[in-house]
Image (cartoon, rainbow, N blue to C red; front, side, top):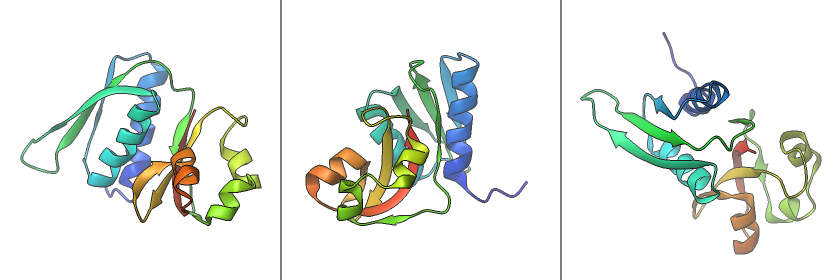
Length: 133
């Protein structure tokens, strides 16, 4: 099995476990990008604790689910976004998030992975990776 997008796979695993009301999800393989995206989701209150498990191969991440995710997924293709575009809430933000104050876009910026609200506060743009609500 060839894995092309590990982040998409990880978020699909979380979505599937959430739909079946599981208490946790095991994501494999693990990566720094996945861990950073999970950290943003944790800060925003969508998931609980998560831990890295070293299995001698690629590693796994065990994520505790809180039952607060309605939908999570990656944004493809990954759009580059300027700070000014974040301010005026363009069409593709409306495409991924259901309402103005519901949900978070996760961006990869020059200062690390963060939510679109944090990027607005720091006045920087980046590349849109994922969404969660």
